[in-house]
Image (tube, rainbow, N blue to C red; front, top):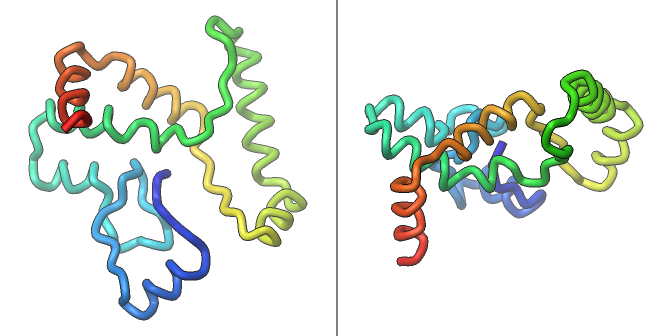
Length: 139
């Protein structure tokens, strides 16, 4: 999930209508911005061409991955499943959540299967799409 939140000022600014969030760049909506569409939803609503959607997916991928935990290529499926399950279990641990809350840290993980699907989309991008993104970023 990719949303930008700086704890205090941002929440206060939103409450006082000092800022208005127009779009979210993540694949799923942040619950705190339930009425703000994602860029993916907007592209579907306005029937954006598939090439443009793929370009947006490629451009936004780095935000979606944020700080991934990865394993070596060729990891056994059972081991990957074990690591993913342990990760999800850890992120539900009451002690961890209490410590995160105390430190004003937000925990909103994206599970391994979702990241894996996103990675496959990114890695399957054709050269023309990668070149187009590179042109846009260099401008």
